[in-house]
Length: 198
Image 1 (cartoon, rainbow, N blue to C red):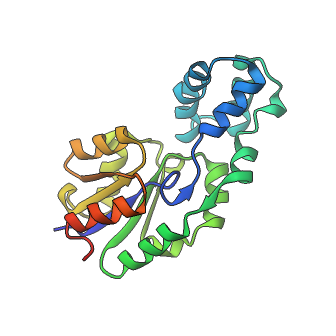
Image 2 (cartoon, rainbow, N blue to C red):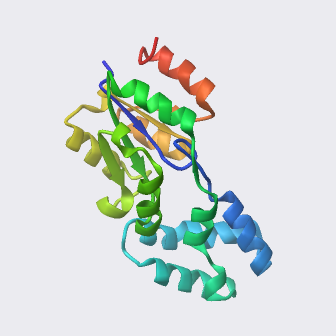
């Protein structure tokens, strides 16, 4: 029996992915996109989103590695200028909250998270799990187990929704029901199949 519905933020509740940011860095640095991803999505993003390094240090390291100016990195500014709330998804969370525990698990650094909390109607979520506070990131099983423990539920009592398949697969490996987010219409069908919505 499902007791909790857990959402990702970026790409699900929020209209934002890092892809346009990588294109921006590609144009600036003239480096291939795959190199941009390797630089940002590797050790640096893990350190930033798990709270191990500051935004300033992250941007300095990106600028040095890619050979661009420090003030051109704009990790935080790029996000603030472009992120919006998916209000259709927000309404779905509100609807589910009447019957289920609602939560989110997000890989996010502190500056972006502070800004995100101002945008979101966070009262729709009973639990809020941000990697920068927990010191763990998806797809590590540790962040899911942490959330389950805090919510006092078993893996099979939760469904997790994310736009990144690797995060969904990781959640499934520990027994959580997983849904790969491809849009709200597909999501409502999958939630209905699980008996979460009628």
